[in-house]
Length: 454
Image 1: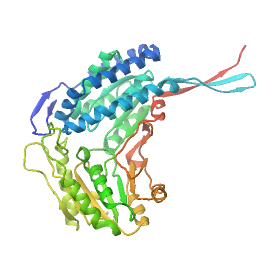
Image 2 (image 1 turned 180 degrees about the vertical axis):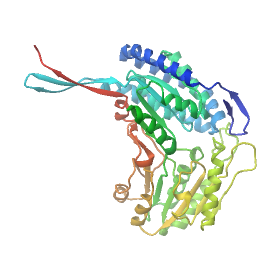
Image 3 (image 1 turned 120 degrees about the vertical axis):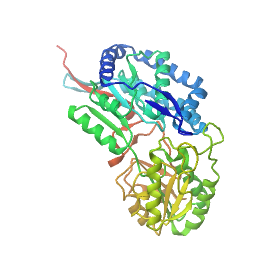
Image 4 (image 1 turned 120 degrees about the horizontal axis):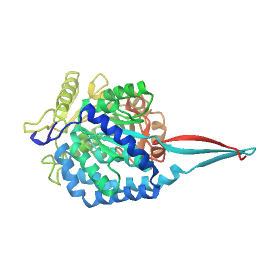
């Protein structure tokens, strides 16, 4: 398997892909290792994951450079992901003990009823390339803390980061048979779904998520899907157009738009439309595009060459149907996977740019005449990950967002994740959740105890 750098398309390195037989062997090793790891006292498991957090912090400059070279994410943003990781890991460490605590429910006339919590067993974690540290640790850290073994398949576009994660976990004291990397692309992932595992946690596209769910259903094992979005944002009539324009530009173009919760479509009230557009364009034109290894770069290349075709088709479709191209519009004439930051307005829902996931530096904007129209359009989607409203009124924003069918709601912010809050999607955006206390107990199964003294 050849890994190419998105900035210039050159081969970075080649890695051997795990064959189906190798995947089965790794699953068998994880099965043996899980029982031993679960028997390790929680205090020691926590100590190992705390050491992992410390090692990541020590090596963050090198780890960020690896991530940038293989995904094209600007170095400042790779460092931002790693710098923010510590708080997320601390959340898991702080709440691990409570998740495992035995619950005494009641004394039913001398019969004591309790609930204990046991590990799922062997967890297959098929992860993503766009935020491999965030997305990965959301799964494998609580899974390990709860006593599970993890078969970790990083995206083939972030395999070097996946191997670095494994080395640091082993160095920190997690046994090699409790965390096992599985390297490869689609065929390797398919083999992992057929292996002896107790749960599958997948992050990726809706189309692949359907195949993962079908494979898991055949064996009646737990499945959790963190899928994509077509996340809407609405700038209401009372929003500050300059602030909303700048904030939503960043929400749309941070990480080159390659975020599940990136702003993917924008609705703006007619009263502030022209001022919003001016502020939005000014912000995007100010973003430095260039070498992702330069810490001053804000926009780098796309991680995947095939996405260039998707974005070009969306722009062509929108323009053919009457959208106005305000900025960008196509691939840049340079080596690598570069697409110009693109802004379209006069959009409507006949256009794919307003309905299908872009996952790149392309945004469609639409003028609306009322909050009612905005709500209707925000809900006109198969996805349901996040939604944002910009307004001076908290009550107005809450009234609008309470009617939008999404897992997360933002008032005067966007493209934000907190470990204290559940991360979940609705409909095509996924099944299950990560983060929050519920994102820890997701890696446990309850056992009911009926205890009657003799």
